[in-house]
Image (cartoon, rainbow, N blue to C red; front, side, top):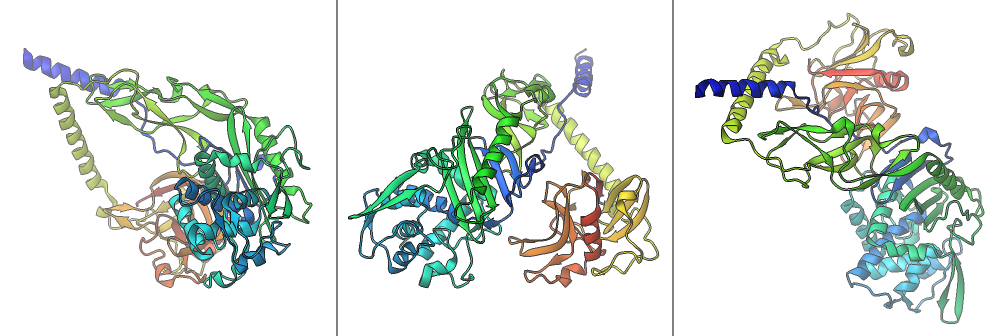
Length: 610
């Protein structure tokens, strides 16, 4: 009798596992912050971004990852390091320092600074701090750097290290504490940089810098909101007026947009830049506008564009509170391994605020849970995973807006016999899957290519010609268009329904333990595309690219190029022969140019090993 009961229990348990509806496994897809809703605002600027300070949620982005000169906005890094030095008692507000001849020279150049410093005069750190923020004075900013690190070069290196600690990298360039060109450092300029080199960051980089500054040192707003002040140097009194004209009392003030900071920046290379911050519905927003028009010192374009961006946010978004204990309809339950219950309800652990389009309700949110299963035991109130709000990107993250999840009741373990059976069942299942895979795996096949090569296909390794000796098809007129990639076959096919109409030599990701760097599955052509790029981390670039996954991470692009722009022929010879990329799909230069410039957004891309 006991044996029969045991068999019945196992059968019933198995049926329950099959019949209960589980949350499906999910791979969370990152949202791009390079461009987000950029078509919603006709912003006359090279790049821009708008974020919620506390959550990092991105509300708007235009070319936000593009590295551009930032001019005096980079003084915010100098200010952060100054406040850090004071906080760590390496400096004090009343401490006095004297400028060098080069700093005096810069500070007395009317083109560079409105606050002149004098040789052999001593100035307090507080004086220099206020002049840097209110008047955007370059000499005082340089003198702060000298006080912290002893020299301009040493301080700039400290600035670089600080950015690296915040994961700000890529084509970032820092050469001065003030934002002026490299040559203004005089004998201390960086010899490995051109004399005209300037600080170069992206709008998203600036948003990260501002986030760290305002979260750690919110008192900086007490100074950034000052419209007018004076710099006192003995009997000399220099009036200071904030370059942020959106402050109350200045020419671009608008009561609808009561900005209380943050920083402007202007050079010929940078154009007009402006980072602002403002409170709305109890939340602090940050905007960055870069490369706006700057026809003269009286041009208000950067403020006009900032108002335009703020108006878009105020008109179209509302902040909504997701309360503790809230349950998302699309992600209510998760599978439990070795638990007395086979599934559990998951809830929002802590109340949070999210910005949503005004017409969107919380019930409309598309949500994915971070795990396809949790293991018993679990304690009520503890974090068991995260909810991801789809297409709600977050600054400095490769994931969407995340909310911690918990369970309301303790999840207890099943008895020992059930746990042992579950382990045996899973082992048998995994063994079966491995056996099936070994039978079907492409390695057992002699030919990995799903379609026969056309007669006019060029020789493998040919990277400077079209793959077929015929005209590229007009992709806008192809019926049932999609793209098929064979990683081990080293081919990419333009498909019309079930028929390949053009075959390209290609190179996919290198294989490690029989797994390619290139993800397999079904994807779709995305908006991101261009004529060339260069990855400083990999020391490698390419011509002509178009994204098919993670908005600029996984691309179709040409064979790789070296730092000088020439083709890496060693890598190019792999084309059509063997894998070797970091995850993208390499094509010949003519094929990549044609695909990047003509393939429609939304075209399906299917990537398989064979």
